[in-house]
Length: 579
Image (cartoon, rainbow, N blue to C red; front, side):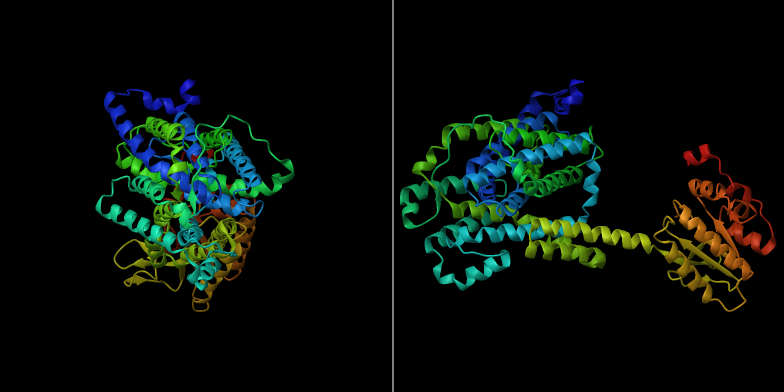
């Protein structure tokens, strides 16, 4: 029962000194990454930097007990930060007391939504976000995040409607850019770039943060007009359950649902991408929802903002040799020490905001999925169109709107594909007893007196008219009076509904009037059950019109032999279930 309530404890079974050493090393690596990242993402979300530090201490501790993955790093992420900023900035001024209050309420709501979804076993909702939507959405979010940092990188603040307008406004006011800030930003970007190339495993962001703080304090960057962070509270905030403003609940819920969904989708994407057949335990989506939900709810009580898994930190966690979530406890301890003992240093050694912006920009570059876009463009133009629509709408209208439109377009494509499935005519490959698509093979024979076709989808009310029109179109291509029989290969048809049964009955009667018989082959058990239980079609399909293979139907049509027809007529409910 204890392991069921706290799945994280399972990783402690057989825990050794070697495992502890690996976890300590990886925990220190992730902690070093988290200090600058968490502060930067908090600023990106329109919050004080300490909110990011708190989010890196308390939620990961609870996830370590409740989560089912040992391969992800939970904490602040850029995508959540931009969702928070875009959703809350229309309700309050970023950085204001009201904004901070809304952010804490939002964190609690996100946690409650994820926890409730986990209890209701809604882990399957991750399937509603298709790969093109996620790629288009995250790529657009990367552009928005980078654009949102341009003001801090240039030292110029302008009003803008979206990231494109922001870039335009900054360009036409290029003469107002702050020279010292530009110098700090360019130097920071180049430092991280070359460190990643030359010493990729070095804690470049932390080195940059400490180094620029020292230089800023020595040369008084704040007095030179550089925007700096010179006050970060020491110690931990008091534990407090946030008060939810029910008057504004309706405005917060759409943002909360978006953050909760994207946080879970991102976490599961990382979990699934790192799964291996050698893993002792599989990730449980519903338990992940519960773990994330309670982690966020706890974070809200300590002035945190929503957390989820990070792509970059999870990769670093794996590369540094982490074996369990004990590494998260180590990283949380390191950040806790920083909060208690090191934050007073910001007063004498202020941190230029341009440095945090540079760290954010270099961290989110990987979210722009250019290679994936290129592959999808070559592979499937329809899905690339979904990606493009999601990308453009997200850029122009916002992250929430882009996500909703992307999901809507994906569902529309699913509906379209479902109502217009693949349906093709088959012919006999020369010298073989094989029937294949006539458009894919050259040496293939087609008889004028036989029409053989395959329908590759469930037959139901939404595609019955497509089925009927395509079938009649194939029939019309035969010379008048030549056609004697139609054979339907239904091996890919997983089900048939009552509406389609009525349609099929009318097609059979129509063909009979023309002297043409319809034969059904390769029906799976559940479809045979439906047909044989149908009052209208039972006698028809059982009277030598249903065969196990196309060759059996052709043999019956040509010679009247039906030696294997009994196989196709099996319709016992128990046997159908076993199949």
